[in-house]
Amino acid sequence: MLHPRIIPCLLIHQGELVKTRRFSEPQYVGDPLNAVRIFNEKEVDELIVVDIDASVTGREPDFKLISNLAAECRMPLCYGGGVKSPEQVEKIVGLGVEKVAIGHAAISNPQLIKDAAQRVGTQSIVVVMDIKKIGFPFSKYTVLTQNGRKVTNLSAVTFAKQSQDLGAGEILINSIDRDGTLAGYDFELVDQIRQAISIPMTVLGGAKDHGDISSLISRYGIIGAAAGSMFVFKGKYRAVLIQYPTRKEKEDIMIKANFNYLPG
Amino acid sequence: MVTIINYGLGNIQAFYHIYTQLNLPVKIASSVHDLSEAKKIILPGVGSFDWAMNKLNNSGMRYTLDQLVLEKEIPVLGVCIGMQMLAKSSEEGELPGLNWIDGVVKRFDEQSLSSKNPLPHMGWNSVNPVINHSLLTKLQDPQFYFLHSYYFLPSVIQQKVASTHYGVEFTSVVVRDHIMGVQFHPEKSHRWGIQLLKNFAEL
Image (tube, rainbow over all chains, first blue to last red; front, side):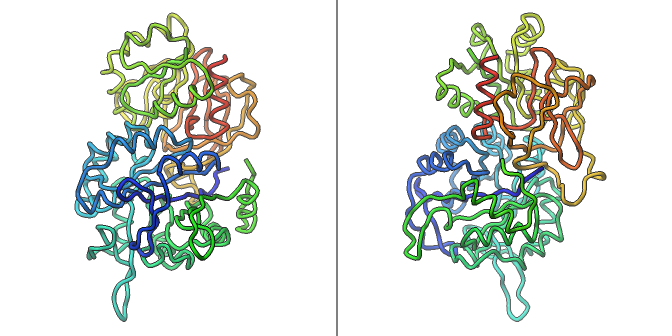
């Protein structure tokens, strides 16, 4: 049977691995390729790598780095950051990346989702939404771009639905409010999007420990549980330590989530 | 010598790295010239059917590959879209496939899948052998990474060597003599994938 995926999300800033809090205060974590090697040993389910400079500065994705990452990964890789055209999507998939995440460019030009999916297949197109709850007193989950610097007038639910209709194979929900806070996943947000779409989704932002992952799986079943901080920091002083649940711990996560898990 | 066909898609380097680390001879073929020493061929791939077929047809290697596989009977392993390309045709595209194994590629029927089984089929799933085959030897409770919405339906049921359950039972490993295909990504499936690629090299 298919298992829920537990996914470390790594951020790249000026060629180095960093971790942010609410999309700011990037803290140095290490070298990207070295981190991938450690995650290989830990047999992670999947890896997400986001270049947080590319879409802000408007430069092209760093194809050399992507190619090195793809060659090193023994697990599926999803790349995001600065992807603007179907040609770039094609090139990245050609470098050996299984999934390409499109954010900003999909919001300004939703047709890109369709064009990219036609070339590489819907299974490789991930639409990533950076989401913040905005407005008073009737706050609404809203999509932001440029690393949370620019507010759009798009509702997260509407855009998730539109992305699915255009041919996205997966939605990556990234909660700005929860990023790096260790406050747990935002179930209210996930509930709203889950009800609107049927394609696979991965949730990022807020996970503190294995218990948070269990709660997410318990609530939604097959889902991608992504996290940044909990896989790169240890303790309240945020000491850098790359970690990932062992096979036994993973089994416990699934048991706690009441997910009928057959250990691999 | 395991020869990986580089026709512009799929994770060539990941395959290459695995074989290098296993100390097994490996080569990347980007033109006909590179195919001369091939004893085993890997046809990788990520992408849609017509896009992949177009790339292979325009790679300059198509004719020689047909010869190597069909006349010289060199073992070949198609991976993901590379497995689907072994078929006669696909519901995903209009171009003809390689037709190396009699069968068609079909889309999962969304009507028959429950809401718990969205498309694409994405993630780690079990591969259950239905026939003993040395490609799947030394694999204990094998788990592999899948990412697809279409699957290979062989015309000859005995060519289904392993199956996987996702709403329905589908063929995850197909074998016709020396021609093999796997729907999952062994190059991205940790220890199980490495063992399978080793098995293929040692067939």
